[in-house]
Amino acid sequence: MEVAVYNIEGTDTGKRVNLAESVFALETPNDHAIYLDVRQIHANRRQGTHKAKERGEISGTGKKPFRQKGTGNARQGDRKSPLWRHGGRVFGPRPRNYGFQLNKKVKALARRSALTYKAREESIRVLENFTFDSPSTKSFLSVLSNMEISGKKVLFVTGEVDRNVYLSGRNLPKTQVVPAADLNTYDILNAEMVVLTEDAVNVIHERLVN
Image (cartoon, rainbow, N blue to C red; front, side):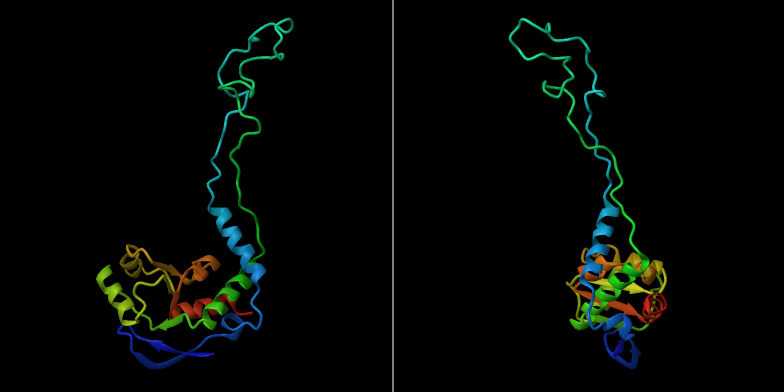
């Protein structure tokens, strides 16, 4: 499928870029692969540092609070029991890693499926390669305005890490700038508009074309 290439002034350059159908035009996008990949992304972002003290970890006496028999109360071993106020917690949370492994082919299929959905929604724009001489949020906003996508959630994908472009867009709350190598399924689906530079299209083809 061919799409137009725009420049930073928002005008059609007359050039066309061919987006691989095996990446941007799947006949049946795999929703389950998308679900697994997004679930893994969220799981890997969890800190997992939660911790509660159990009865063996809190400070306190090990002495029985009262004698075993004759009081009419239920027998108690010590005041660190979970049944007592300030006692330890039963089966409290412990630090753990929520991440899990996912096949590379499944992750690639999920990204292809997500890009296919965006292409169907006509939410993908291709921009000719450019850079800024120095970081400038004003210039970045001008690019978005010229493309008539300012105010939308924008995922801006560059071919390689471009420090000036990244620094220009990082202050914008609805804009995310990433290199094509770091593109993931969640970011694609979370964006209202995906903007790819020509170099980014080439990198995506190298990584995702079967």
